[in-house]
Structure formats: C-alpha cells, structure tokens
Image (cartoon, rainbow, N blue to C red; front, top):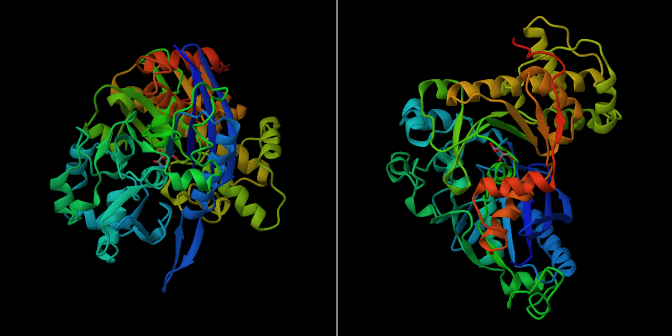
Length: 497
Ligand code: LRH
C-alpha cells in the first residue's frame, strides 16, 4: 500500500478552490493550494441584460491554482473537477460558443411551458425522477432551441465537464451531473426519446462516464501554461510519492459538487440524513433505488445520480445564498455588513424574529433579498426584521425550519427512521444554524467536514489510483476518523409547525 497526492478542483457558485489531497490506507489530509472568487457577470444582449458565468476567468484561476499545486507537489497523480449542476457550455468543433448562462438568469422562465407542453411534469418525473427546478438543464435547453442558440453547435458540456475538456481534451458527460439535466434515464443513459420529443439535437450529448474513470492526462499546453512543462511535473518524486511520467491524469469524479459532498458525509448508518449546505442546502438521504411516487414528486424531492450507483434522494432548500445575497445588498448600499460579525451578534440576540418560507421561489433571483423578506412578511401578516442582525437571525431560523421539514419529509418519503442529521459544507461552520437544526429536528446534528465536496472529489480519485480501496461506507469511515464531526444535541423536543 502506498500514499499519494491528487488535486481536487471544486467550483462553487461563489468561490472555487484547488485542494491537494494526500491519501493512504490510513491517511487523509487536505491542504488548500488556491482559493478564488466566482463572480457572475451581466452582459447586455440587445434587449436585456443576461447573467453569465465568467467562465474563462474561472479557468484561468483553475490553471493558476493547478500551477501552485504542482509547484507544491510535483508528484500529483491525478486531477478531478466538480462544480455546480445544470449549467453548460455549447461548443462547435471543440470551440466554446457564447458565454455560459448562470442558472439564476431569467432567460429560462419560458422553458417550463415549452417542455411541459410536450411532456407532462408527472410523466417527466417517472422518467428522470428530478424535482422541478425552473432552471433544470432541459428547461434552459428548450429556451436555447427556440432562441436559435442550438442551431450551430455540436456539443454540450456541463460546467465541470467543460473544465475537464479544457484540461484533458476529452469530451465526456460524467453521470452524476448529467442526471441533473433531466435528460438521463433512471438507468443512467441519455434519454433519446425525450431528447427527440424536445427536438434537441442528439449529437450534443457526450458519452456518459462513471465517476472514477480516467479520461485523459493534463494537456501539454495546460502543463506549460501552469508553469509545469513536461520536464517539471512528473519528473521528480515529490513528497507525495512517485510521480507519473508525463504529468497527472484527469479523472472523472462525482462532478456534481453535491455528489462529491455526499461521498464524504461521514454517515455511519442508513438512517442518517445529510444537509450539504453551501449556496444551496441539499437535504436528503442516500438510497439504493429511486423513489418515484406521486408523494415524492409533490414534495419536490429529487433522485439525483450518486457515486457508485447510489441515489441522492433530496430536496433543494435555498441555502446560504439568502445570507450572501443579503450581505451583497447591504454592502451595495454602503451599509457595513460583515457576515461573521452579524452571525456572532445573531447568536446572542434573543428577540423573536419572523420565520419565513425559505423555499419560496421569490428568493431565487439575484437582487434585493431583504426587500423580498419584507414582502413575504407583509403578505403573511408578520413583523419584518428591523436591522441586519434580525435579518440574519430570521434567515438562519427560517433555513433551520426548512431543513427540519425536509429531513422529516426525506424520512417519511423513503421509509427511513432518521436518527442523525449530518451537516457538511460551509454551513457546518455556522454554529447557530447547526444548533437550530438540532433543536427543530429534535435529533443530534453532526457538523463537518466543511470541505466535504473537495474530500469526496479527492477520495474518488484516490480510489481510482489505488491509494484507498472499498465502498462508500469504507471511505466515509476514513473521513469520520480523520475529520471527527462536531456534535450539537437538541436543547428541547422537536419543533413542529
Ligand atoms: C449546489 C448545486 C445544487 C444544484 C445547484 C444548481 O452547488 O450543484 O446541487 O441544484 O447547485
């Protein structure tokens, strides 16, 4: 048995990072090689402003980060990319056409009607098991087709697959993220009858690969760009063990960030629920088989593809976006708002705050978030928060409430008696949130690891490289040993609304 190092590129909706993972049979260490912002851009499009990802800037940040990683550890064996779901780049002859849209862009609004006119929501759910989100790729694509954006393109790559392509030259569709398009069958193949029914060009869709597949090697042009020409990377044996001749391979990981996060949730039993809490709060359980009941559809629970053929049965709750977008609103108005300070003060405050529905779609779009909380409160006849501290407390209480409802639904819909709630991702750092979830569910909350997504990415690569072996339970046991989660006990019996 040996020890080696892999690099995880993990791209979130507000920031990205390149992490080094050193893995051996009883070793799992994560260090940060680079962290960079991911700031969307508004571009005028003739009659409106479109919201896009600054994808080329992001790729430069990734390249720079990989350069730092390779200088720190020339023996990196493998690189893998995960990112947020549903969004994609369109290519012609291998060249990106246009700037990929952000799923919060309003262009996808007509997509729901375009798709549901041809396939009812109920029929769709039977085929793809996905919760309805207005920006699921198939709705975005329906709009792209009508707007003529599919006329001259011959390939679609989801965001992490686009980075994998730019790093390795291989065009693939990793299955976990492809499942969020709505265009995969339950068996994990492209759903050609559905693709035809929506009049989408079949040729756009790339071969589906499983997480853990080696898809290529870092392109020589990338190696030289990152300042690690073929004589650099792969030449010497670094601390991480023998280097590969020719530089690192590129490995498909659970490229949907949430799929990678779930790999690293240190669950010890099938009765554990998880909340992967970053920009979104993804709340659910892991299953062997999808739940496609009408009750699951009505509750808007999704059956997304997991690593090793598992099913991520979960519901999207708005997540830390409610906080980050509020902070952005205040700062734009010159109000001094710092999240860490506000959270500390919110933790101390005891004044009652409104609990609003964190699931309400009105909170989806960018813009003045506190004003929309006010609007919700006015409509429901409750007092709106008075100052940033109250807004922050109200948001965290409302998130905890929505999380608790989703945990309960996940258990009821899947027939599991939930006895523990894991919180991973940035939300695991939010003590107030963790405590309130424990209080509202009446269950122990195990918080951490914060970097679950990068860890899951690392572990799938490490397993492909033979640095660790075993099923997800074995990998999770390793995570639990090295990154022991923090326990929050409920302070009283569960709060039911
Ligand atoms: C979280 C996430 C989530 C998706 C959303 C678009 O980053 O991937 O799982 O629903 O972004």
